[in-house]
Image 1 (cartoon, rainbow, N blue to C red):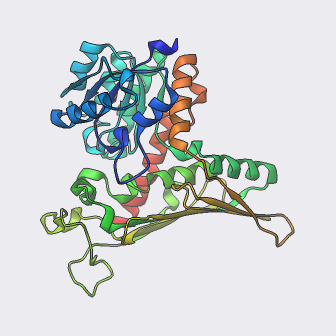
Image 2 (image 1 turned 120 degrees about the vertical axis):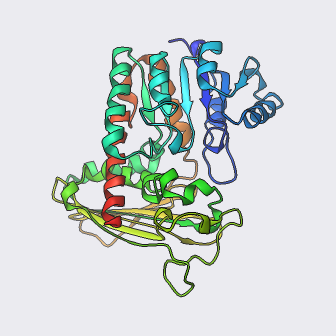
Length: 378
């Protein structure tokens, strides 16, 4: 497929597609950097938001990429009016990834012949409902030779690539993979995030990247071995589940207690290999800077990656019979750019093997996140 043939539809005009103050994601910026595409439509039920985004783009340095773009409420209208061949789906999880219209965005897009880039999490419905939906999408994509990629960007991070290379060189089976993710309650200003029914909960919605890395390094978990506990929400100031500082726009008292997010969740399990996986997620920090890390242990091997979301992330490695620690830095890492470049290259070459996170594989990560959530609630 020639570069000029790539006609892109953005489904959703929010931060994941067009940037914002909350994080480094912004697919439009990466596509502008990569070039070779034309943005033909921005679809969002809040039309004024899509129009505002489009106006800003038409006044910016990459206006030529948007000169034929339209803003519409319905992605179906966008498909019929502009004939895109690629769609970036970046909407809240409650609005996609399910068989019932209008939540069947992926299914309608592949029926229309569009290659898909789908942001995580892939849904909010229980896995037993999502899996048949995923299989329906995959079946049509396979028949139509369409590329479907899911936005687990860490799989394209040079630090993760380095860790995989060191693990392979070392050659010993992994004993333990441990992931930790601490978010800032004060920075979470979207009311949807605080309602498990709408967001899926923090393990499904926020810690999903680390669930994916836990699988990427360790393999699939034995579901029957998963054990988890959680510190639940509380309105009592002396309780560990009480948060003293949340954004003013969040009115958590309007959310039923059983739908409020846990303050901390920790889980462990056996991998099918016999190693052990562990995840801890919390929403206890204040300020704006999240903290995250992932450790990998094996016989004669310890790898520790700190703050992979940030340009200053570092990888510490101790390998073999030595006390010496090597430290690797990745100041120019942009896994978002890397995943978009690989996706577009896969579309142009018709080579789905380039994609490191298929829809089917993402469903396994989704299953793990739900298994952890259910274990913690039980």
